[in-house]
Length: 483
Image (cartoon, rainbow, N blue to C red; front, side, top):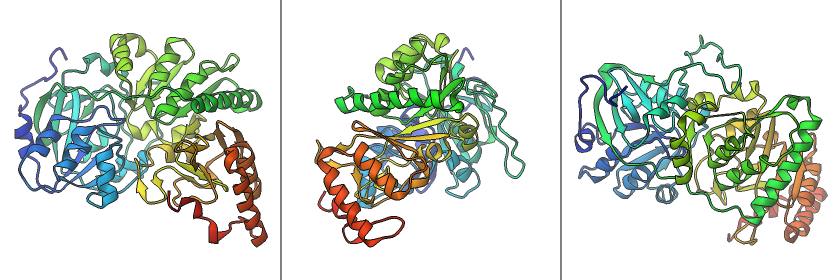
């Protein structure tokens, strides 16, 4: 692997590769957490003068070369299943781009078996490629399933990613049902695969070279609310690991991607876990995990993507050998596997837009109508974790909007998936609580004081109507009007 392109492989320019894509093709693109996605071929597609209506399927979020450029060129007709760019969000909400959201863990299978979309062309970023193999760059995501499904394959070899990044990779493919074997991973830091993805040489259209870096993740500085949420979560977890035999030897945890999740990771470095190991089993490696590794507070970090800031990228790339001892990147159907989440007894910590008084969570749609990003992996972790924690500020828009509401207008996670809610106001442990008890705990422990009286009044109106879940249907969605 001294040379990034090994063997007598067809070389194409980005423009030549774009000509190999049909106007209505379904593109399966690598990328997760806005890293490891193809860049120069999508830009060439956007710059071509053909009338295109492409379907793009990605393993997770990708960068502006896809979700900005293709939309602005009018070349994107349909998008699956997660996006995080303002341009694509606007096009979806305007109806210019059709969008369908899915859970991460099952996406590879749904593509592989033709349940969601049949791939015409897979466009995959790699740090090296050979006659029948490629090595992914900073994310693995759904690349193995996409390569297996697509009729044709275009590989972008990105020379800005150090070749030694392959040391993080653990690519393992599960078999096909009904003969799928158990995943032979016995601990989060174990390795069961290789550093590469294999493909049928007959599918390779060509190799394109790229020198465009991933856009680094931008984490905002923690707010006062972030710090208060982190303190409340830390205090809760310190008590929980002492109480529950589930955490006798270690705490296995996952955080959702984003600035709040990154801040929450940092708080764990100050947690008193006794002599227990702290282990991360989730989707993305963020800067907060590098801090924990540097401080010796984290034993293992297993994910599918390196979603780092510019400083975090530089730090990791400069010390790959050291970090590769503790960081593992896997395909998303392993990082988000319900089986492995259950096997390792993971504590899932994710955020959301809002939660209603009876435990239903809206993660994706403002006022139930305007999509933001997508459900991502929160569905995989919230449903299958040993303990599910929702962490969010009590208010939004500088306090003008309560995130604790009477009823959510869109539900991504039901009352059955959420165990504990943490805001800067406090912690509500909802395990075993009836709907009335859930509502009371959320109002008194998690809602902002400015909204508690109104929420109590809503609950009282519902109780006068009766029923197991005491809603006042006439006013249930009033809080979402004129937002």
